[in-house]
Every structure is written in structure tokens, then in C-alpha cells.
Length: 385
Ligand SMILES: Cc1cc2nc3c(=O)[nH]c(=O)nc-3n(C[C@H](O)[C@H](O)[C@H](O)COP(=O)(O)O)c2cc1C
Image 1 (tube, rainbow, N blue to C red):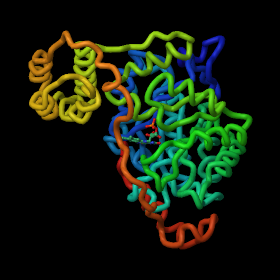
Image 2: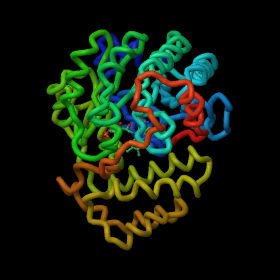
Image 3: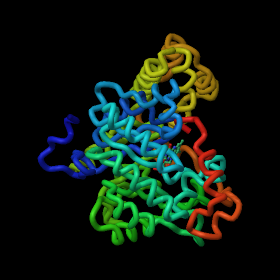
């Protein structure tokens, strides 16, 4: 039984799960593995969702997928995000997670804008096919039984093809435990500003389950502002915590009314980076793979800190924990928190792009027979992105 289910005054309830703070770590492929989730938990509270797991790969029990769904014992609420395009495969994958007691929370991904996914009708393209969306969500809710099943989606395909209000109502009707909205369309990818007004509209539209807001929360203050401006029940934080897992501590403080914020000097950042590398090495059961993976986090951790270009390059090619220790010892550990330079946007941004879709996809909100055949190819076999 997850420890957080016994909280007497929850800040956010998702089905039977009672969270101390209304904060969710957004699923991020290649990022929110057990190593990063553990690190974030060490600083704060909330619900920490896995990177996306492909339903088909789970049903086929590919070794990589079975590794990705494994949680550390300290992860008391085991949360897994699934991606799929077919009600049967999704239901089967949910049955595996629930029947084998592998998850306490399951989220479905309807927000992925990546062309290789939307071109096959998956991710953010899928809610456009209203009946299929409803069948997938209903099948998953039924298979999940007492385990809360949630959905995460975008506003729609583009401004002319918005789906979030219909899809939100359908998901509510199907019995989901919460609905998260990233306030962008698929065509926006990560460009522009997230539309928080859309989150407010969804909150008005969906009344019986929590609505969670997502998009452009870079600080605890942003999270409070999103809650106040949209009336949403909780926040989902993605890129804002890249290279700063302590944001979850700031969020916990902010939601308890405290102004205390973690303002790490370079020494504390170096220690967190080292811990991340160590946890990744444990996760991959390989120091070499762990060090290779931590390289992509260098720019995020050291954003705004006085670290020379040469040292940054060496960190971004690090091969072992010993080498990492030597490099980190070369930093000026007396450097204080640098202020604004360490704050603000990070991670994916990019430009709007027309969403790649199957031929004729937008002609109807029902799935045509010939579209059905191409759809399952959209599942691919790669978990985690
Ligand atoms: C590197 C990366 C990977 C992502 N992978 C997933 C994913 O696997 N599943 C998902 O639903 N969303 C994924 N997203 C989207 C985020 O969950 C989130 O909706 C988006 O980043 C907007 O929130 P933010 O502004 O707080 O970053 C990903 C985003 C990034 C930056």
C-alpha cells in the first residue's frame, strides 16, 4: 500500500491516491527513468510518472521495457505512463501492470507530437478520432480496476482541430481519475507560450475529476500562478525541473505557504549532478551507460553558473564516475547561486510545424476501416521515446 494513501488531508486526490502536494513530474522520454524520479523525490513530494512505455512492447515483454517499468523500493507510488493506439493492446498492457502488481497509477499518453507517432495516428493525433479515443480509455479504465487510470493530452492537432474539451468530457465519462492538459496543440510542438486559458476552460468543463495543468512552469511561483489563474487542481511539471530536481522542494514549500526556495551554490549543483550520474549508473547497471546518459543533463544543471567552456565540454563527454569526480573537483565550489541566469526556460523549444498525419485523417472524427489497418503500426516497439 503506498504510504501517501494514508494522508488525512490530501492536497490532491487521484482516485485512491492522496498526494501531499498537487504536483506531478511530467513523463519525459529519456529523462524520467527511476534514477531521475528518485532524485526528484529526494528533494520534494508529489507523483513522479515514468517515461512513456509502449503498450505493445510491454505486452511482448521486451527486456528493455521490463527494465523501464521497474521501480526502486523507495518509489512508494509506482506510476507508469503507457502509449498505444489500440484498445485491446492497451487493455492487455494495463492488465499486466495491475495483475502482476507492478503499478499504483497508470497514465495514458495522448500528447506526443513526434511525427513518427502522429503520422500513424498515435499520440496527440489520436483524440481526433473520438470513438477510438473513447474505446481506448474505457478499455484501460476497466482493465485498471481499482488502480487509478489517468490521461494526459494536448489541446488538439492545431487551432482548427481542437479536441481537448470533447476528449476531456469523454475521458471523464469513461471513468478516468484525472485529466492533464498541456496547453499547446500538436502543431505547436514546444514553441510559443502554453495556453493556460485552455486549462481554465477544461477545468470549467470537467467537473467530477481533477484537472491538472501543464506547460511552462519554470518556478514554484509559476505553479502557484497557474493554479490561481486557471483553477486547476494540480500542476504537471516537465522541462522546468531539468537540471534542477530541487524544484520539487520549492514546489512543496510554495504549496505549504513557505517562501523558502533552494538557491544552490555551485557546490550543491555539482553534488546533485554527481548523485544523478550515480543513480543512472545504478539504473543502467553500467557506469559507462550512466555516465553517457548524464551528459545530456550538463547544460541544464550548470545553466547560469560560471563553468568554463573547456570544463563543460569535458563534462559532456564524461566516461566514468572517477573521471566525473576529478572534473567536478576542478569547479570553483565557492561560487554562490547566480540568480536569474540559473532560472527560466530550458529543454525543448523549437518551431511550430504542421502535424504529420495519416492520409485523410482530418476528414472525419470517426476511424475509417482502411485507417484501422495502418494504426497499429503506429505503436512501434520502443519504450521511453
Ligand atoms: C524530453 C521530453 C520528453 C517528453 N516525453 C514525454 C512522454 O514520454 N510522454 C508525455 O506524455 N509527454 C512527454 N513530454 C511532454 C511533457 O510531459 C510535457 O507535457 C511538456 O514538456 C510540457 O510541459 P513543460 O512546459 O512543463 O515542459 C516530453 C517532453 C520533453 C521535453
